[in-house]
Structures are given as C-alpha cells and as structure tokens.
Amino acid sequence: MTDAWASVHISTDGGRTWTSVNQGIDLHSGPSGDAVPVFSVRIDPNDPNIVWIGLFRLGGIYRSADGGQTWERRTNGIVEGEGLTIRGFAIEPGNSDVVYAAGEIASWVWAGQEMPGREFDRVKGVVYKTTDAGLHWRADLAKICALPRLGSEPDLFAEQMPAFQHRLDHGNAFPV
Image 1 (cartoon, rainbow, N blue to C red):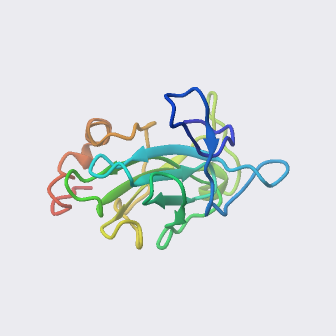
Image 2 (image 1 turned 90 degrees about the horizontal axis):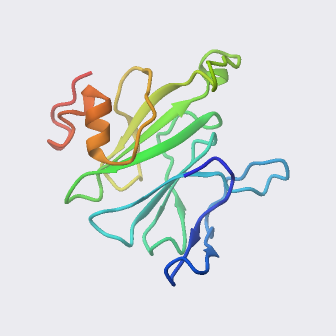
C-alpha cells in the first residue's frame, strides 16, 4: 500500500474498473481534510469477506465483514492516535479473532520533535494483539522497540522479529 491518501477501492472485473468503498471510515487527513490515508490492507486468509485496513499516521484500524463494502473502526485499546501508522496485519491461521497489527510511531510522538533519519523519520514500533476480532487491543510487546518495515504475512513477522517466532501457539509463549 501507500501513504498517498487514496482510500479503499474494489474491482469486480479483474481490475478494469475500480469503485471507492469507504463507508464507515471516519478518520481523514490531507490538506483538505477529506483524504482517507489507507496504508495497509489485509484480506483474512480464513474468511475472504473479512478485510482489515490500517491508516497512515492516524492510528486507525478498520474491519470489514462484507468484503470491504462497509467498515467499522476497531481501535479500543490503541493508545496512540495521531502519529501511529498501521503497517501490516497478521491473522492467526484458523482463528480470525486473533489478529496482530504492526505499527510505527512517528518520532514527534515519542521524542516530542521530528527526528529525521537518513531518508525518513526515525520511528519506533509497537505490535498490538486482539483476541476478539478487534473489539479490544493490547500492546503485545510491553516496550516500544525498533521496528523494521514489515510485510503482512505471519512468516515475515517471525522472520523479522524474533519475538514472534512462538506467536502461532495461541499467544501462550511470547518472549520479549
């Protein structure tokens, strides 16, 4: 995905035409205040009607249960708001209620000022977990850590963050 404020679009004809589907997404940004900054999208591998999206720098997480036609905000327990970008999701195989959301926190949130790195802002990361399909989230890493750019597949979480290597045992072993 991108940080181009493009919102969510669906194609039902193999990509020839696209329709904007943003009903229920109530967080907006951009110069005119009407952009929908969708940064990440994940279709649930257990149920293709369930779709998750994460927003750029607004801390927004939304879930759709109808293939992306309508959206419901699911942010209860997400402590960061503005300044948090949701970069990706991992969904427990066989259990759509268990979802991990990987986020990056802008430096101006955690340091009080922008701290540019070589090319981009120096961010810190956080991983949130829900066991009830996003009705409640909790930070699964007790401390904020340096977060590499993550994909949305569970294998990438395990590969890029050793703390996730035991994640798929229903959250019983989660070394930090």
